[in-house]
Length: 272
Image (cartoon, rainbow, N blue to C red; front, top):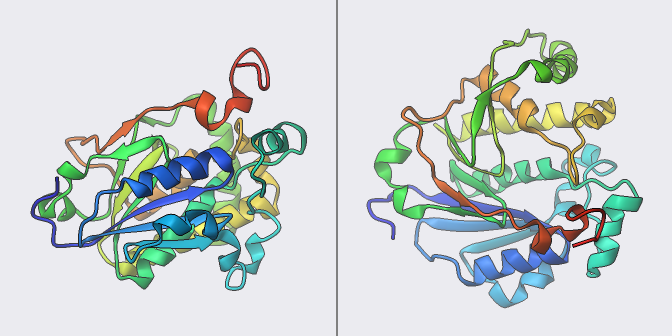
């Protein structure tokens, strides 16, 4: 499947809850094994994956990052249960929101292994490994994303303003109002070096923490998580991270809401 690949790549999943862990487990069990592919998982229960423990799979629990980053503990945590109904009702009845941006910590794991090509994947997204080779990886500070990309629309301006207020305060910089926004169902970053990747991580981390601390994050609430497309779009623009030209689709995405998050589909909660 892969030819002419001399750089390492990281393929990463951030999963909690019974359905997402099950899908991630199956993906890892049937993974493509290659000397230059390292798999990473951030989850709520490391032992769930004990049957697939392997040298090419590194699994961490989200609370493993609390010691170095204690500021995230009040805001970014996994609701732990093996009961699907209880898990779904945490979103419907307890105002729980999945900490989608916790996937940024995969960049720190990749750094520890000197990997600068990082795929952040949903369990319903498949990366086309046949397209990844040394030629593709030679184009640096590029984002390959899934589904779509678009210039920010007028209805996004108020949300951009919320972000801008924080950005001006913490980084003393103005935002470009005309930015490209990327769907974040899955993404693959090709960074120039570890230093640049760390800069991206630091900005992502600082911005998301401030969004939580100031409760600005509430304006970005989706059906089961906080949507981060606009926040990341701002950082991409500031760091000049862009998509390849011509555009290359690296992913197949097959959203299966009834299977992964049935509490969000049908005529109402749990009516499928």
